[in-house]
Length: 130
Image (cartoon, helix red, strand yellow):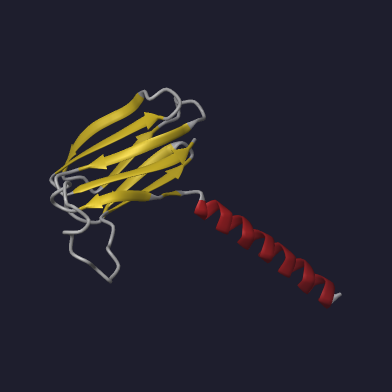
């Protein structure tokens, strides 16, 4: 009886762990782009780094709400979200000194969307599916 109970608990714990890992993976929006002051830098002239570049912004998706979290103080940031199939801008807003921004996309259809985060020193873009 103890073995059966142990196997049952182990099975449920393993199932919950696998579900949680897949759920967490779906939350973060991968952002990529330029993190530099001059967006016209030639790759040959750019400094070569061998360390990890810390990303100043992170974006997450949960229940059709995009949350953008800023790790560094940024004076002015523009966040723009466009629908891939039509190219329509569904959200565009400029923020002053943001720390966390929440964007509700509940009125939008299921589709692939692109997010752009633009400031004086940073240009990041990413893609997510609603």
